[in-house]
Amino acid sequence: MTTTTTIDRPVAQASALTAEQVAALAAPLSRANVKQRDQGRGKVSYIEGWVAIAEANRIFGFDGWQRETVALQCVSQAERRIGREPSKPSDPPQRDGWGVTYTARVRVIVGGIVREGSGAGHGIDVDLGQAHESALKEAETDAMKRALMTFGNPFGLALYDKQQRQVTSSVTGASSRGDSTERPSNGNTPSNAAGNGTLRRSPAGNGHASSHQPAGLPSAAAAADGVAAAPEDAALLPLDGATIRQIHATVRSLPQPQLEGFTKAFRKRFQVPEAASSIADRINQKQHHDWIEAYLVQRQTVA
Image 1: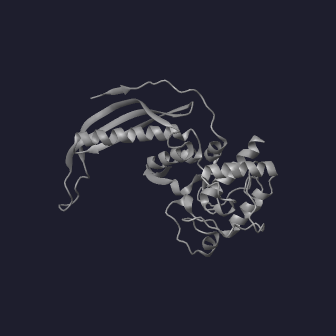
Image 2 (image 1 turned 120 degrees about the horizontal axis):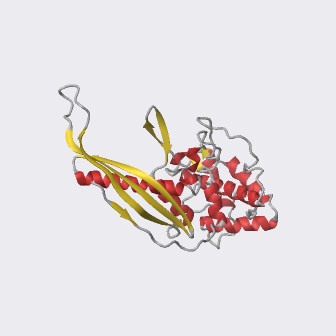
Image 3 (image 1 turned 30 degrees about the vertical axis):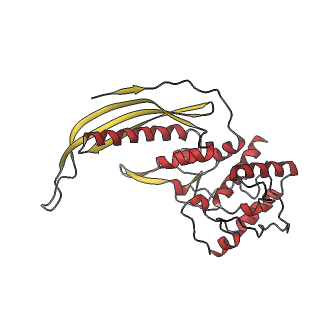
């Protein structure tokens, strides 16, 4: 049995991505978002579907992107045996079931940018309906991930590089090559990146974060002393004091116009209240480090 569904809708007018979105798309992929599965004689790295959706919501906004299934086809449906053939009397017997395969093509629209990807999904179950459901969902998710992948590293593009040089492996943002955690020096580290950015001086003016700490965020001192427990989300991992001071020094060395531009972008990206006189104490998590590094590198490229 083969069924085909095709949807074709008009595409919105083109619009450019914001500088913050471009910086986020250019940022390395977090190792915490990478999973592995056995395939053939080796392992394949991938990101899960929910991670791709969460990243799209984070970068483009919850209402800033669309996903459309433009083609869906059941290419295979056949009866099959489910389970392994018993090798001893105590092993569970095989069961009669179904194997179903779907292919899908999904379109992702961000403003006026249109990307498409194709994928396949397989469903195996004793219930034919459940087999169809599993295969259909897997095909749509696979196609969506392939469409989003074309936008940049956070969606898995970095995994197509066998050396995975744009996959971060530590809270300092160092990328890994294979199993190594070292990153080749390319002049784009936070200590020497040049570009657009802004950080207000703390009252003490000594390069350290302010003593004021927003509720719900681990303090730099606690992070350095290992007092606070590491959050489950890798993006919320606390930065150590030395890294925070390095970021402060790098940003404060920027020309005043660039410093002001950075402050405005950071406040918007991380929703810093207008009442907060400084953003220095807001830079304390891995997500802040990764965003700042990508932002500065992007400004250096544009300049």
